Length: 300
Image (cartoon, rainbow, N blue to C red; front, side, top):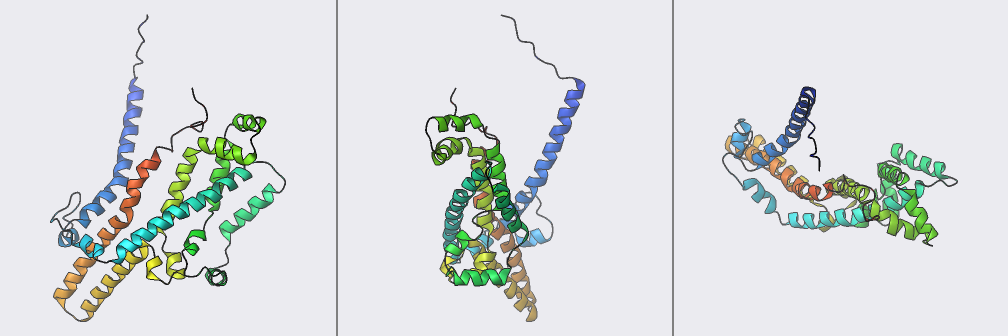
């Protein structure tokens, strides 16, 4: 049996690979360093942070910022609400976006008109006051449904889904139809199993949107026990801003310095508290991005 010959890299290949590696490494550092810096600052003495002495790892280890955040009993309520809105809201998004994208990927009379209507909503809206009046008249004000139904379908994500479904293998669908499967059954049992990459991307897009959302909750929710995490964290930061301002007005230099120290510490702690769950979740969805569209439908 002949030995396989190893392909030797030329000098040009080595230079090209070296440049690529350097570029990717530089890009990684540009993305990773801000996260490391914020994490280090959240565990460091704020005086050292203000003096520029913290740049890579924590100095003057300090948990006061996290203690201040979690001593607020509403934080856990906010976490529970945000998890609920993110999970249920994302499921609603997928249940509406995937069928819409699949249907619009097919050719049928009036498809262009429907797509035009979708596109119009991307550029024009009723405005805050008409939307508020509509929410009130539909009796959705101060209900959990208002956060779940507003933005239930993202037009940009529908376009992504339509493009994906338009490029899936048609032979699989045709074979299912010949076997007697209905359109719904073909979509659920044939198309969805080969669309894990699309579902992973849309899940990430929608989940991040729900997790970071606070404006609609601030406008349409009145009861604190329904509000998401972002509003509670925002209230903590505002209260510390007010404390710092009051200390400044009282001309109490010691109290002012302490308020400013706590404000800076809370700023970094709040970023970590609000971002960490998504950073932990992201790697579990990343694996679906690079998978082929035939996963789950064809076995070797």
